[in-house]
Image (cartoon, rainbow, N blue to C red; front, side, top):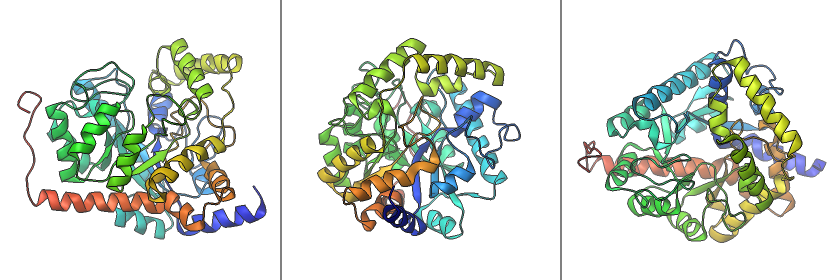
Length: 399
């Protein structure tokens, strides 16, 4: 990174720090040490264990982070709800423990926390299995601080189809539409990462709020089913929504996709599921050694910030600068792009974009402005909708 680009990028980040749409630190902490921040203290450099710690968040110009409260799709019903509550509890313990972090539940609060020099901490559920088919549980998750829910993870829910599962209900079921409508009413972002294109389209038909993808890329640039097809990208533009580009190698290039498919076939599970499987630190570290041996024998084809920038360029060129963001998926991926190794590396991506002609205003929108705008509009929709109707009492059986 040249001195001139470095100076430009850090000047942008001074006033418009990164808000990242997805980080899996908490599930990794669950797998390693059952959320014990005394054993792994993220106030200190944890480069050997994690992609994320507070010193590197600061170095990366991060002003806001959606912490994923993900639990594996192998959990269901009460087990999934309980595990999600444990994740939310761990998130609050983390936020309250570290002075550098502060909860933010609205667009205004994000701006205030950043103005106070802290890292705005937001929560996102990754997978509709976490609510146990209950709108009451969804509402309580919101009250506990959750501000987005990804409708599925790697498998279908009873009411929504995943991008990486067989056809189930064919998109959203009647109850699935009620879920989206209730998310609009309470002001929870409807996250369409991980869902099937049919689910994306059904949710966009139902939702009154801007479209939101916490960590996804463009299908035209990489044919992984997790990525977003062109017609849906166009509808993101129509709604004034956002696609937060991710660093997952398998979603960046075709070679990366083939490599990730081989990794998942070898392990029989996704990286996120692997992170959650450790019964304790010793078992987790044994699993990690096994994975590292496989990775050494089967290295990921090189991907870099240039590949992430290609996806951002594609989305920007198709629907405009207002529809892009960053959702790195740090601590939720098997390996990272070569020059985006951890949360300190966001400036390298912004420098790559600046070298391609992105203006300072463009970079500020990507890093900060677009997400804040989408949140603020989602809050406005909630105020409008909640004035028209009260809580839904629909169930899977009655919807």
